[in-house]
Image 1 (cartoon, rainbow, N blue to C red):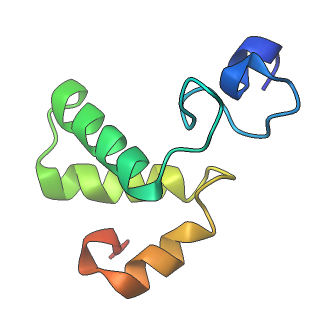
Image 2: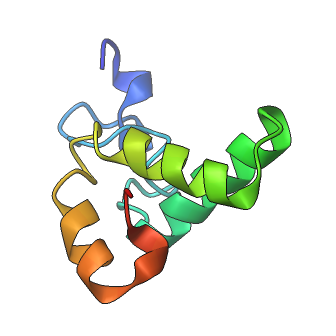
Length: 83
């Protein structure tokens, strides 16, 4: 993140970006972020739900806030599988 505006709550000490945090800079839940990304992919990229879920997980696996949580979520639910 290049500027303080890109950090959650515009706090340069916050390790998470504005897209992954609420207005106070707190990290969104994994489930909430997953749904945001899925809905964005379906609405903006004309993907099916299944395609959008796979894309969301692929994107989240690249993000520092979520990459370690992908495996945990996948073990709890088939919804969060990268397969």
